[in-house]
Length: 126
Image 1: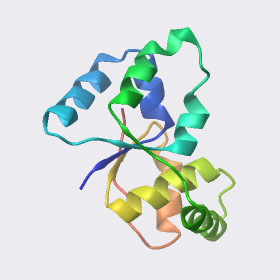
Image 2: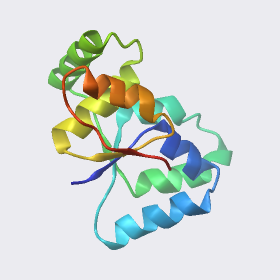
Image 3: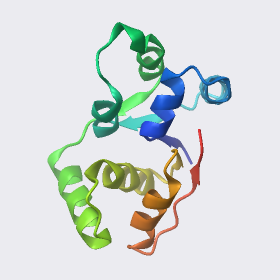
């Protein structure tokens, strides 16, 4: 079981939240590289020099690109869930596929998407 970062995790990193950074370092020390879906990066990244901490986090993460098959799977999942946020659907699709825990500040929406396809998703706060 791996770890997927949602935008809430990236925001926590960008803010320098000690608890989050301790967890991230612990993952890396166990050779567990967290996955961050590319749409999540797009949601959080603004290219500012003030995002040095976020840039550092992304170097220590696997940024998962979205190919055509994944994009279609995300669209189907969003449709089944009645979700309008495709970034949330992308997080759920990838986490379910990889059997990951998700680190997010928005567990209710993510769990609702997973519930719509009768799957359980473990979500923890940053």
